[in-house]
Amino acid sequence: MREKGKSELLAYLLNAPTIAMLLFIGIFPLLYCSYFSFFDYRIITQSATFVGAGNYVSAFQDPVFLSSLKVTGTYVLVALPLELTLGFILALILNQKTRGSSIIRVVFMIPLMVAPLVAGYLWRFMYWPDLGLVDTIINRFGIRTPEWVANPQTALPSLIVVDVWQWTPFVFLILLAGLQALPKEPYEAALIDGASRLQVFRYITLPMMKTIIAVAILFRFTDLIKIFDQPLIITNGGPGFSTYTASLYIYRVGLSEQFRVGYAAALSWILNIITMVAVMIFIRRTFVSEEKRPA
Amino acid sequence: MNTPKLRIFEKTLSWIIVIFAMIFILVPIVWLVIQSLVPSGFILNISLSIFQQMNLSNYAAVLNPSTSGFLGNVQNSIIIAAISTAVTTALGSSSGYAFAKLKFRGSSDLKTWILSMRFFPAISIVIPLYLLWGSLGLTDTIAGMVLVYIALNLPFSVWLMSSFFQDLPVEIEEAAMVDGCSRLQAFRRVVMPLVTGGLAVTALFTFIMCWNEFIFALALTADKAATVTRGLTGMIGMYGGLRWGQMSAAGVLLVLPILIAAFLLQKHIVRGLTFGAVKA
Image (cartoon, rainbow over all chains, first blue to last red; front, side, top):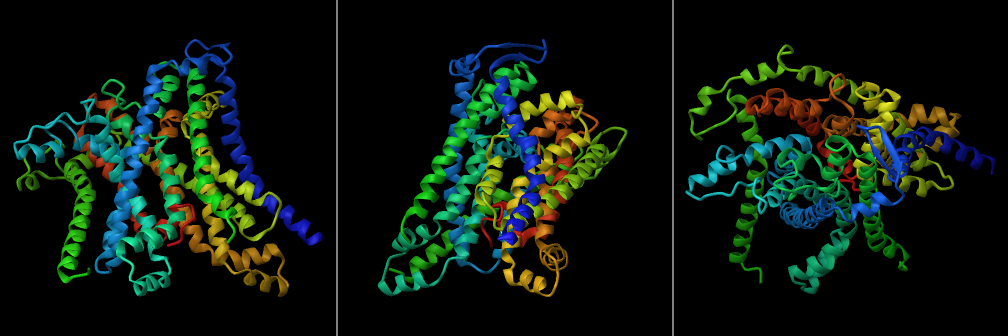
């Protein structure tokens, strides 16, 4: 009993610095942020007046904020399924091949290691009207191109391509690792039973990969919902508000154009709550329901 | 169903998909390197003649301290990333060890809470920190950035280190303690040497994340403590327009060391990317 108490104390001691850091630069700023989200707090005039829930009310009447949520939502709902599908297809293909697969894996690691900011500049050059590589290639075939990132119709899809370029390899590497760790027996059994390959995929591979797919979704979702670097560099939110993501707009409101930090704090809390609720629902539906089921 | 013809078709199709994906991934990177080698930075005509104009003038310009602040930014980034990495890895292994090897009340809740800190959108911490750092005098200082990056990377480091400690069989430590080692001695002499690989992976990943981080660097640094990513955005402002060649050269210099590090990490990349959740 004493031994147990001692090891508990040791565990808390070992965790103390981590907890202290996360309280100081995690929880405390978050609480502070929620505190001044109730004030009309402006940096330039150094004025702060209590407005109650005023900032939250104006948030839902702010067309730019609502549109930025829509843009962020589109980002998530288009990029995430695309990355999952492409990553899964590539993982399934390369799970069978052995020749050259280590070189291919190295190539797929490259985009992941490029700073998102550099990826932004890289693709800004790629999309540059006439001079960029995309136009150089397409114009050669005599096809006229839209101004990719300056056209409201093509700007967001062009940005999503960049995200797919950078993060499909992430999904691919995770799912490939998952596929390679799967046990062989169920496949042998299915082969004897004469199951078709589609059936094998649907009833064996997919269920066994569930947890790994969920991990990939969780990481991609929480990254996509806060996307900032690439839209800032490539389109700067434009044209109009067509690529203003939530984080980009909140940054503009709070720290670069309007310096209305109180309002920005309220907006960032709305984004927080959306993220938390989505993550909680997702975790509950994929993991908890599984644990509660009798084994 | 598995006729030879279908097999060949399938094989060809898979190869086409893989080759297309490789081209899609590599072309932008190769293009960035070519742009960085052409003095003007843009290539009007794709032909062999571009190889004749290639030289290192863009790199020379970027690395010249009298015309560009790039080297200063590199120095800041190295200092900030190195200190943050050392502290984060140390704290991460201490917590990670507790989660992996000790039983205590609230263990799994605490571990989940630590991970959840990573899922909050950065913007909701950037805004209050901008104000707090301003009033504490930490804005645009190395210390300010180090503190932020430690907190930012702790969830990763705790989870990853904990997964490496979990890999060690309990018996190793018990044997050492039966032989008369205290827990601390067993930890120092037996456990730590066995997780040096894990420490290296955690440290390298943390360094990469500090090096590539942007939104905090943008909000909290301006000049004195500007990191490489912050410096890159400054290059636009400085010249009014985009200097393709120099920007590309700076981009290549920013990515190159990380790619070398990643090459060393190859085997552990999936494990690192998923905070230790998926072991390849």
